Image (cartoon, rainbow, N blue to C red):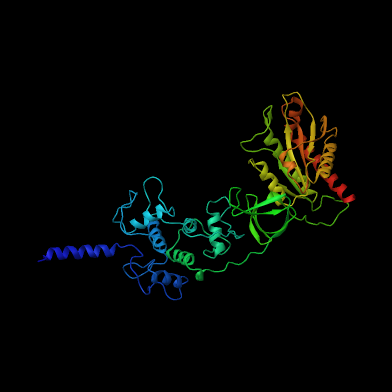
Length: 473
């Protein structure tokens, strides 16, 4: 015969289990806090009817509650029809009796939602929207990418590609104003929306096809097209030289999302030529409306040459800013590869110039040679399609640098294979060596801001001479 004490004990255990049962463990035909007018009603009921998620023991769904890692593991695990159940796990904070123990181990085994690598799973940690995006792209295949971007998801973010894939598939959308809210905790209603769309294409919205923002021409022999804006991403094809492409987005790392001949994907923008902006000629002002890219050499951890307490990176930046001011005053549009003490790889400098549609590129440097050499010189490259124009630009600038006020030895115009000028295919380019920073006399001039302003002014005149030459051709 069962004693009264035993019955009471069993009832207490049952009540305790119900009070602390997990969300998703109680199914319902409807939830009082999810009316038919709720934005996620259809998706929530779809998942509830499939017993993928459920409500709380009080019958509510709590659509605005945040989703924990253990809840996500159990719901996605059920959606994937994984083993689940109550099992021993590899995690110190997931005992066998935990409501999601089996699914947590399944998700870890499948490398969909694993632990932190320190023996803990973080069962009660909340998930963010960007984390959820990454989890869904590991659980289901969404291979397509597009030019869709969000202002708060930089291309350098590890979640850029997962979010782009889900947005392309119509699984996720953003907030008003073009934002995604990647760091926002995901709520149960939004989780249901995303999960239902991942499972059933009928719930997916058709994202608006973005309009091209520009047209460009491929200027590489073969330009690889990839699934993500990274050289290590999967190659899905290539464009031949001269292919005209529609550009849907230009990313901050120099890549662009393009389309042509039924092939869409990411390419590096350094190998795209954009049409120059046509500005009516002004015989009295050949610089008006011209796009000039000014490159201050070196930067940050790369100081360049040094001498007599000076660093090349500082001299080049100061002089480049003076040059910018003179050019803008003359009506030119100036694009700087850097305006602060930062470092860019040479490829990035080329990319900045190409993305800007530059019509002339001038890289500012200082020289050094054991303290014995002195003077100014300019360089051009003759291996690209602008070789004749490169030499013209370099020559005009060198001639302007030889005024008595600058008092510099003429070291001439020389040909060289410097990366930043060799890889500028669509604009005249030159590299200017102002003087030798490790030579006593040259260094004294480079240290003088009066001299630097005069040098910048003369370089600006050389650029003006070049555009005057083009105008008179």
